Length: 128
Image 1 (tube, one colour):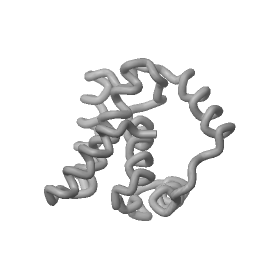
Image 2 (tube, rainbow, N blue to C red):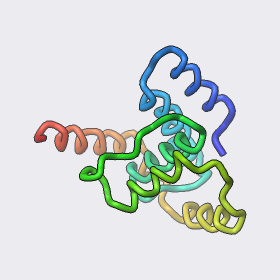
Image 3 (spheres, rainbow, N blue to C red):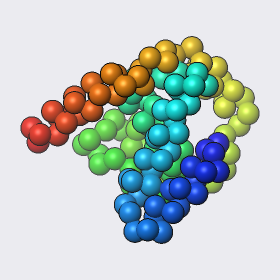
Image 4 (tube, rainbow, N blue to C red):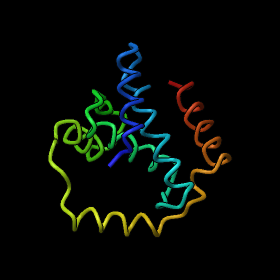
């Protein structure tokens, strides 16, 4: 469940005319902070970003799912259902995923790791 302040900031961004991706950035920032605080871990920076985007979709931010060629089929399907879905996850499933995430490393969202990730994504973007 995202924090109230995060949802308010995202809604304010949308009201200000910013893109849904910018509004979703608030949720990604929150997720990165959660990993840094040790609330849970993430296997990679991409995983932390994906969790944040999923929370944004579930909070009602009108984010489109990734284009079909850009992501795995399962990711596309998951994003589509997250933006449609309004019900909550079962307690068992939620606890299981939280337990799993707690075992993941926390260093994946350090400044240097995020910098590496940004550079890698930028390199990939320039080619296309």
